[in-house]
Image 1 (tube, rainbow, N blue to C red):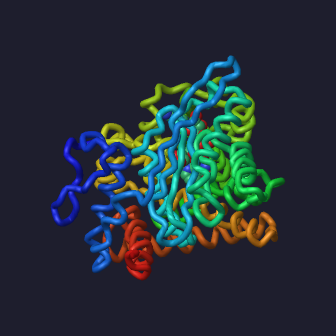
Image 2: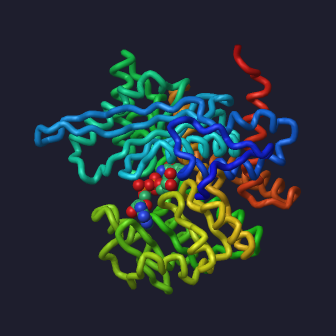
Image 3: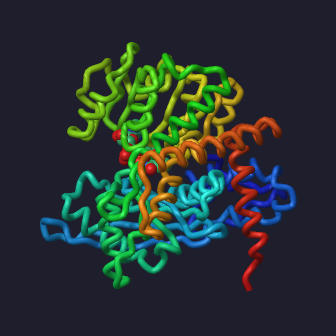
Length: 435
Ligand code: NAD
């Protein structure tokens, strides 16, 4: 990240919130650069663009819990609501040792853009706790989740802000959040979180939705550049909820998953890894380490001979250093923010198509929207209906963004931002400023 704060189109420095360090903006700085790239395409709405450059509300909470050994531990938690112009906040909760306020702010902003890009009626929000959950027992994790939920209780709710799973959180964590919120509010509020267990008002198809969306968008993008999925070689970084499901769907469609990387190791097999067996293995061991296949050094992952590359782990993975080594023709961003702006430019120059996160991984929030609608109406749909609606929404959103990219000769990321930021700022303008 450059040492100076990014400038807006008028050449002014962004007025940074006082808690951010202009010398190290992290993921939030990347997001600000993305907004600057789209501003020239916003026409008269550009006068509202500052609204996108600051979160509406950022909450930092202390989360103290008693550990099983009797000592008291304190963790830092966050919930950021970036923009609520189009509806309640929506976005996941991440438990990770590297979570920072800058990261949560960026993730919340990308949720605003994503929700508007697929046109679901939400603003953007995100939460997290700076903790390595692997160091906690099941009971400690429950206490942590419940205390965090209590601390952010006043700003979440079915019509205010609806959390969901993200890295290292799952349906069980959502069940604890739903129960804690319900206990505090005095009635069962299933619609306060999505990604819940089916027995608590969760939706069929939600677990697979993000990976399925990655597959749907990836297939559309591949078709547009004349790349056949059958026989295509695919490399996937991250083998969790998003990466494993995406790998499975590409495998089922006849692609060869030649490389998979997780936080422990990188596996390579030019003949194609046995994805169902790898999923079964990882579900027991919590990692792909130890499964059959050649083991590569971490950095070698980016040089693997493949047609499609799917980053589905964390942000900031494709950088100016490794982008020149990438062999793929298509990058499908399962993760949020995996490509830095410098790497974006390199990939564009090298004619490698990037299907950006804000559309490629929007399948999760789309089915979260279905879950929330089902909870409100207490009427539940079949998995077939859910998958059909998901595919239709993702295809329509991708095709519209593709057209904007062609019309303006811009990348799919800038096109997605044009579509999304226009929707957000139109809502902002129509609502006007209060008071
Ligand atoms: P997850 O916790 O289920 O899986 C994360 C995977 O990434 C694991 O396999 C882990 O081993 C791997 N990983 C972690 N650090 C790594 C590293 N340094 N190098 C390589 N691999 C590493 O998380 P998830 O829900 O699959 O989320 C992955 C990404 O997708 C995140 O960026 C998340 O924000 C994004 N996302 C998730 C959803 C969702 O519905 N879960 C929706 C949209 C976007």
